[in-house]
Image 1 (cartoon, rainbow, N blue to C red):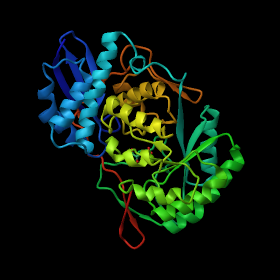
Image 2 (cartoon, rainbow, N blue to C red; image 1 turned 45 degrees about the horizontal axis):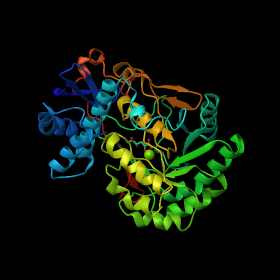
Image 3 (tube, rainbow, N blue to C red; image 1 turned 180 degrees about the vertical axis):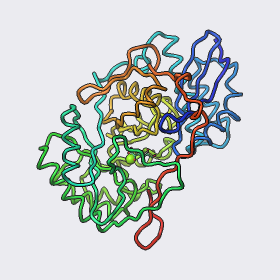
Image 4 (cartoon, protein in one colour; image 1 turned 30 degrees about the vertical axis):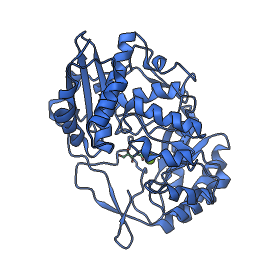
Length: 403
Ligand code: KDG
Ligand code: MG
């Protein structure tokens, strides 16, 4: 069997997605997510111009060899664009291998380590009452873990807080710049968690995403102030380019730390994991080199008591979510899976067999990944994608802050 075609499909059913579809001489097809939010067309061009010509005629069964060929053969290794392109090929080849074997992909990864994938939902609110009722909604729907993002007095825009049914931080316009105040944030957040714990008791797993806004010592203070509320994780307290930042936070707090949604290689987290500076690694299939490479990261993490917590925002397509679920089912050190349901128009373009039930996601039992792209459902107006830009933040004095 050989690869006869590989097509890059750009579409925008509520959000831009880039998908690679590989076809074989036996008439099978496999899909991989290639969406790099905010920089989608860079990956589409990388795939079309540099990768697709190399795939034609190759044996689709040689997943590892193809991964090495694309990674080492490019000379220029790593980086989000390269690793997202490799991820798309790798994911599509795993989908094909499952179809060739007649098995769901998790069976090829070693079989089930658990019966379902525990997910966390995103609660938020522009007031404390709104937040509490948002958390209650998740509890009613069976969620065992909820991420808490709260409005902060005197800050008008807060990451993750919205009145819309589906949170979408990006927009087509050049983004408005919002103002951030660390002082207001640090003063307010502990009281939010006190109230949520008081209302929902000790069993609900609570998470919080700082979205890289703090310095290590500020994050250490936050972690310490949140200890009474026993968070499952504090996410992205500081950017992770400097692993020593995490060491400093660690020295001051027992609040568990999660990081990794922007990682694209094992080399981004090797030291964080090896030195046990984090508790959860949040790398995901689409941005970290596909199932082949993410499995390598998760296996390294397993050796060092680090659990998984893959990114699952709506700017990763249902193809990525499907692939993540197969790996989540198989690895021994799974922690949590982020789950933001996609907009209905996205689900229509990407028919998938995974389903949510009582706090868990369940992967499809059909051969492969159990997801496809329905090209007939892609509206002509959306077939080239649209400009989607992530928000921008500044501190009160006008200097640039991390989003
Ligand atoms: O586009 C960026 C989003 O994927 C990111 O902001 C979401 O931080 C995020 C999360 O934890 O889901
Ligand atoms: Mg995050």
